[in-house]
Length: 404
Image (cartoon, rainbow, N blue to C red):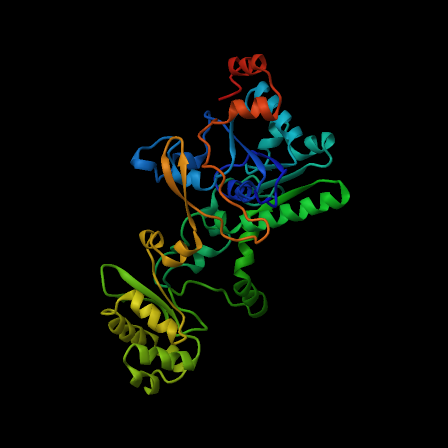
C-alpha cells in the first residue's frame, strides 16, 4: 500500500461546521488519524442541514456534514461534564495537532486552551479558526461564513447595481479559508520537525477573505475608488456575462478580453459584421454600448445548444463555459475522467456520492478511506484502542453522561 503524506499524524478535532472540518479532512484523507469530537447535546450545525439521504432528516443522514468529514473517527463527548473534559485531555495528550472552531473563549472555559495545553505539551500544534480571530474588540462576535463574507465586502460587490446586495453563494469564507489553514498547519509541522516545538495558529475568516479582494482594496488605497456591484460586467472584458441558450434555463458564460477574441466571437456567433460595427469595433466603444451589445449577443445565443456553443468558442480561443447545474456536474466527462466522484458505503445512508480529493500527489496520493462517521460511531474504538480505557472506565463515563 502506498504511503500517504500524513501517515502517523494524530489529530484531535474539536472543530465544527465548515472551516475546521474541511481543513482536518485534508489531513484525514492523506493519512492522519483524525478523531472528530462531537456531542448529541449540541450537534454540529451541518448535521441538521439538508440534503438528507432519501429526504429523511436525521443527525446521521446529512450529506452536507458527511462530505466534509470523510476518513475520520467519530467520538461522542460531552465537554460540559468534568469526566468529558478528562477524556478530552487524554485525547489531547495523544494528539500531535488540536483543531477547534468555537467562539473565542469556549476552549478556555473548558480548560482546554492553548496556554493550558502547552504547559503540559510544549510540542503541541493547535489551530483555532473563527470569524474575526482570537483577539481584538470584535473577537467574540460569533457567526458563519455568510457573515464573514459580508464583513469582508463581498456582498457589496456581488449583485446588480440597481438592486440590493446578492452575496456570493453560501458561506463563502468557509470554502476559501481551509487552504490557508492547511498551509499554516504544514508550516507548523515542519517547524516542529526542525525545532521540536509546537505553536498556536490563530486564523480569522474575515482576514482570509480579504486576500481575495486585493485589487479592489488596493484601488481604494491608491486611488480612493470604492468598488461596488456591477452585475456580470467586468472592467477588463466585454462582452462579459452569462447569456441564454436553447433549452430550459440554460446559459453560457463568456469573457472576451482582446480584439482578436472579439473577432472570433463574432464569427462563431454568425455575425462577423459586429466586429467592424462602429458601436463595437474597439473595447472602449463596446463598453460604451454594452446594453445594446448584450441584447444582441443574447438573441444570437438563445437558439444555440450551450455545450456545442462552448466547444465552438473554446476551439476558436474564446473563454466560454456552460453554466452547469449540480446534475450536469455529476455527468461531466472531465470530472468522470479524473475520478472526482467517489461512492462510499455509509452505515446509515448506504452507498452515497462524495466529492473526491481536489489535488493529486504523485508519490503520496490521498484517498477517501471511509465515509463520515455517524455521531459517536467510533467512541468505543477511540477510548479503548487509542486512549487505553478499560471497559470498567468506559462504563463509568457512560454513567457520568460524558459520552453523549
